[in-house]
Amino acid sequence: MDTYQNKIALVTGASTGIGRAMAIDLAAKGAELILTARSKEQLDALAQEIQGKGGMAHVFVEDLAQPGSGERLHQQILAAGLDVDLLINNAGYGRWGQFGEFQRDDYAAMIQLNITSLTDLCHLFMPAMVKKGEGGVINIGSSASFLPVPYATVYSSRGTAIAEQELKCPFPPFTVSVRTLARVAPDSPPARQKGTGLWAVRAL
Ligand SMILES: NC(=O)c1ccc[n+]([C@@H]2O[C@H](COP(=O)([O-])OP(=O)(O)OC[C@H]3O[C@@H](n4cnc5c(N)ncnc54)[C@H](OP(=O)(O)O)[C@@H]3O)[C@@H](O)[C@H]2O)c1
Image (tube, rainbow, N blue to C red):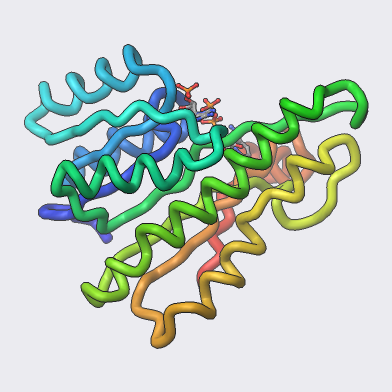
């Protein structure tokens, strides 16, 4: 889709990196943005940048590593009268190293953010899209989402691959498009071969 006029896109993890870049790109293509992450200052600055170029952006600060945060975000967005057409589950992080190097709290937060909140947000926002007869979900994964990776076992159990299978089932006929984008680490052999990190799109 080249134009997103009159479409509302929710981008999680919009304060930096890939999420920020996707938000800027979608705004340039006409989408109204809902930006979320923990860093209010960075989100406000991005919203101002988008508005300065004639776009529309709303900021909702949420820590998606907290239980119940997906539901809170959903409720705030509904209360603001915003109807999400495109959900981009981008917020996430990974831990690479010996399993015992990282604390249980850290793993719990990573699972909540990378898997539970992603699944919750899909489950909360998709029914309205299905009812409307259109919508989209992009789950940002990783090349490590598709297989168990030594030294990153918790990160590589990320829910994208699982979620995409599950999402296929509960809403037939499937009128909402779901994609998983998986980035290959820039210094991995396939990326070196192509000279850059790859984005693989898995379509349902
Ligand atoms: N860059 C890569 O090479 C690569 C490769 C494979 C996969 N990925 C995946 O792509 C996604 C984006 O990566 P990136 O490189 O752009 O990462 P990044 O620059 O570290 O950005 C991560 C985003 O997630 C947000 N975030 C982190 N913890 C959060 C929390 N508890 N609640 C809400 N938001 C939270 C961060 O914002 P706040 O800190 O403000 O909350 C930030 O906006 C991640 O899911 C990552 O796993 C990236």
